[in-house]
Length: 149
Ligand SMILES: C[S@@+](CC[C@H](N)C(=O)[O-])C[C@H]1O[C@@H](n2cnc3c(N)ncnc32)[C@H](O)[C@@H]1O
Image (cartoon, rainbow, N blue to C red; front, side):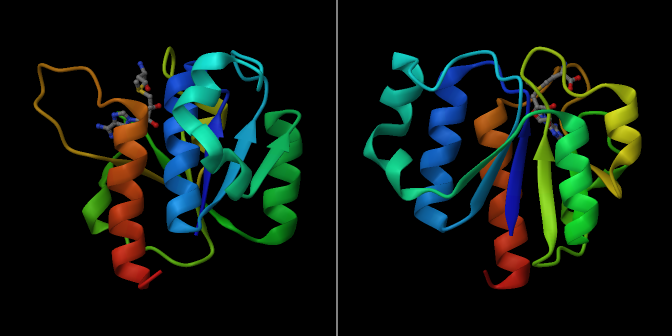
């Protein structure tokens, strides 16, 4: 199981997510440009010494990530508030990459269209979205439960 963060822009979220990936032994992919440098103190504080324990792959651009992903034949599952499939209904596979959009704007339409499946965590209609790090935790919880990862 792998996750990908599309152009993340809040350093505390990314640090928290990478700490989770270290603990769960999940590879993390970051699709650049991120909105902060790896020297950012909020990022390092949230990730702490766990940042040395996680496998992080950085991709210069969405295009480079897509070329790599298609070559590797990984299935792309995008988590989006506009998803059509409830995330509990998806049958996860160890070859899935779970991708998450940026905090400020999600992902552009062409990126959403490239995903093999678009998943939503159903929410109260009047509210906008779940925090990115919380979304990753919920998604990984279900995906790893199903795949016994
Ligand atoms: C703060 S949200 C971004 C909100 C953005 N305005 C949008 O429409 O996508 C950051 C990311 O968290 C994930 N996310 C948040 N709530 C979600 C939900 N209810 N279902 C699926 N993904 C969600 C998505 O990957 C989203 O791109």
